[in-house]
Image (cartoon, rainbow, N blue to C red):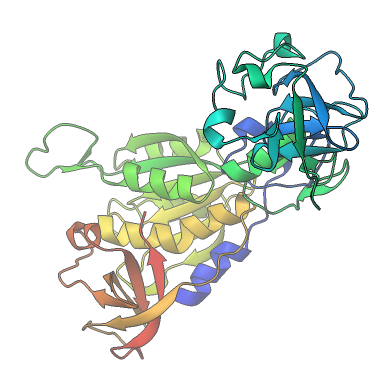
Length: 416
């Protein structure tokens, strides 16, 4: 039996990330960058106003010439010294602009502008409409073209200059980062349409057992499939994609055919993992010249778990048929394997002091459900290899070494 820490680490280290591929950035969420992202379009892409107020040129006072809202324009009017144009945040500043004078620091015809004055406009200032370019202001008469605005331009110009945040070619993100919604938005802002991401690993689940049904009320001697939902969640969290889940009877020829025709990167088999009369997986994999990387783990529950590699590069993860034991195995071997194939960075280990009592076995890790109790994790009693009821109310599973004592730290596996 392989010690649990060795098995968990080996599953993370034995594989290599899958190759990179071009992916539309808006579809790359959750995938991992295989190449860096460089800025294609400067940020900002044009000089624009950082405040609502007046674009002014030269020294005060300034004569108001019109209104400029945010939006696309074929041409921009220019400002000559002594001229001003009312401007909305984000609108391009006209050529000749010296600064943007915020409403709060300006006065029209000698009267300071209040926030209520500056909000009295027909429609929002951010409305994108090129017909607004330089038009007379549809607000109080004192904002009409020809009126005079005055104020003091202080240290800040309130103009965002082209490329001041990111210049063309600047690094947006290094490789190895998970594409989050924020990262994708930053890439789009930088003019990036496509990124190179590691291909997400594909997974097929083979649920074995004559007693297993996928729906309906179990009859005598039957149980519901509880693995598909768990493996789907763990696969998704690790950056993979579960493409199919198939029920397999306890028949070696049927399981052999399923192994041979399944073309996904990873095959997960629940059940058929031990040495019983209905357990055929190990024999079938040996017949196919599989390389055994893990063949049994020194932990309770979940000891008959395994990780093998077929000659064509497909991975096989064997989960015990008892649901809680299978969950332990999926977190021990399947999740770290998929994280590596997906190119995900190694996560820091999660540890915390664990309180409560547990039955320990020499040279064997005891894996128990725990719930957070402040900065510690407390053991939930009543877990069994076949039952998920205790894990259902837990926050994580604690891996307790044989030397564990109450209140000492242990490795934690967050539950899906």
